[in-house]
Image (cartoon, rainbow, N blue to C red; front, side, top):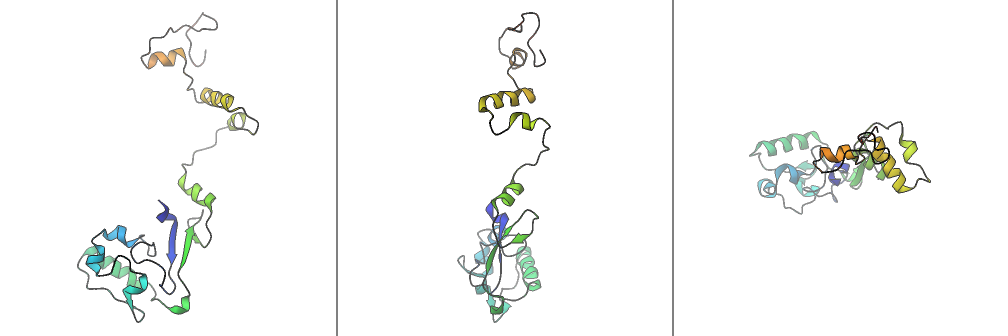
Length: 175
């Protein structure tokens, strides 16, 4: 989900959506309140952040739920909107899990992917001039995933277990 990687750095609050942009610590307010949020807070669904303020102060109704109370606590701890802060800016999460004004696809990918240790044999298989089918078969060998007669029998298939090359033993990964 992209929302996790981008947030709004509030300046004059003219551009950021009150409900849909991630401008407070727990993400988009609509995901926190649900679809009843606009009715509960009396703030329109298409409202900008500036519409929740009045003369530099937050303008919210008295809290009628724990969610509304938590939102009021967070908003009162934030500095009030000011034109001197400049315009709202959208910032991206980088590799250090801090936010920066520029987007990096590499940093986003590094946060998304599953990190596993590099195996010692990776350069044997994955190199520039490698033939894909040979690399794939070698990769299966290294992972012990070749469909040997022994492995096919363990899946319940009716196959002969004898090695087709030497006819003297059972065909397994090691033989």
